[in-house]
Length: 379
Ligand SMILES: *Cc1c(COP(=O)(O)O)cnc(C)c1O
Ligand code: SF4
Image (cartoon, rainbow, N blue to C red; front, top):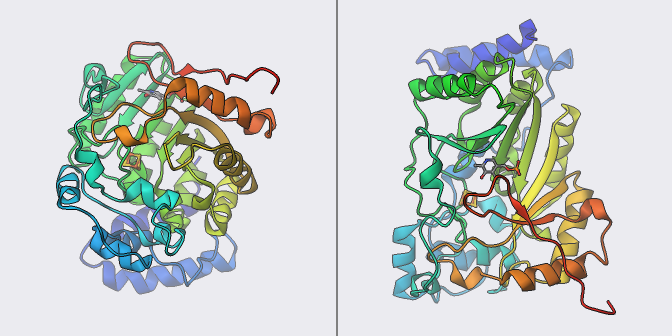
């Protein structure tokens, strides 16, 4: 499956980590140029900031964020406490899509640490999906028969205040080599598994040199058909889809499905659409999952626009999850009956293929539970 060109690119990555990398850089640039002339790899947009730079420049407090939006920082001391339990992290390309001067902006609401998170709320837990019980070994969550979920890293490029993993004890550590060895072993011991899902945290936080190495090993397991990647990173930092990523995608024998995570139409812009086009040119299936959130996307128009905008960008809606009762997130919660009736109204305006499945994860069930939209009589 590997051509010399792909091997060359992967080798280049590993060379870059060595001290002599700097000297090699000049040679590599020439090498890239040659490949580009022969149209082997796409010419990179020179103006594009590398994703790791975007990540390093992400915003980490309300005091830093609010002035960028022309808003004053009115956060209470409890917001500090909220940040201590789950730090604030917002990349600038995501901030650029927020509406200036709007304290109720739906993108802002998802990421701003808020004192409301510290209010006590009964019925909200630190592990609502009981994932702690399904970890057969470190980094694997195997709940559903033929697909295993691998927690590649605990870190993300954006910290979403509603995240059901906000209390999960991952740390920011990435898996060590011997942990990957035991994941491979686990998959081999479960021959019914035909799909691996890279999740986290956010698996695209891993460097491409590492991802390509791990995916090479997955390619070699004949039982596997598909590789799925669950990531919000390309939404908040579109430059994450760069030529390095596209080259390991192209090299993989597995069918790749990228499930993005966005919740509001304003999150989708031309930069993302362009990246999706590049992914699709490599045969990647691009889907979206979102979470139904109070004051973010809990209106008919917000849902309809999200699906329309996703489709315009080449992305198909997959799931819309109901909120998981996570401690600190009660203010995002929407009762299930309300969610079903909302989706019933949304269905009036969208073709069936643009209707995300309203779903909920019920601990112990063999699959996600899909909730049917409900229609009010006469509607
Ligand atoms: C959600 C989830 C999956 C994927 O479920 P699909 O319905 O295939 O999208 C797989 N494993 C675990 C542990 C999950 O939580
Ligand atoms: S990117 Fe995903 S895993 Fe990370 S904080 Fe947001 S919702 Fe949670």
